[in-house]
Image (tube, rainbow, N blue to C red; front, side):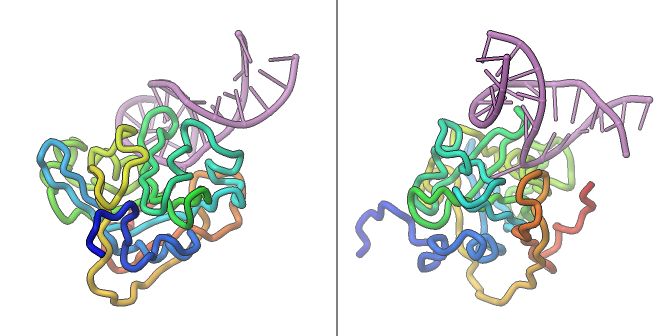
Length: 198
DNA sequence: CACCTGATTGCCT
DNA sequence: GGCAATCAGGTGA
């Protein structure tokens, strides 16, 4: 081994499993960026699963377009899209290449570079509480769409301790199709994911 | 080509 | 709680 790997093997292939399972597995993992030389990092505490062609709420439900092309890449690929023409949202591609399943990162707790994130957000709190806010705090934009979370500008790190996390499941937010699927997952007890959602 | 709809957020009344 | 910002894709004429 130890040759340059094409695909990052996150925690023993966790990202290759079903997206609904992977969305729970990545709770507690870290996402970091070093744009401008400043390290900023959060712990993932809330996710949503979007399952490729099977899922009416997925961007990939109606097939490949220029926007969702990154979803069809290898597991561990970063998919970034613009939401409502205003914000950026970051996803972790899972499953197998071509499956187009991805985990939306909805909320993170800042653990490094808090000051830098406060500058980027122009506020002191609620720095990464929401998919658009999280990308703003980490300075993730469409420029990083399609890059590898293993060796790209945006890095994903499996959690070290495998202590069980108390996971609460519920319906996904902001969608109108397949609203009955309880594919939103919140890690309780890590703190920071407790703010009201209207 | 025109119109509608979002995997959202923050500011306004 | 209401609603504007802002644009790519989906849909249908």
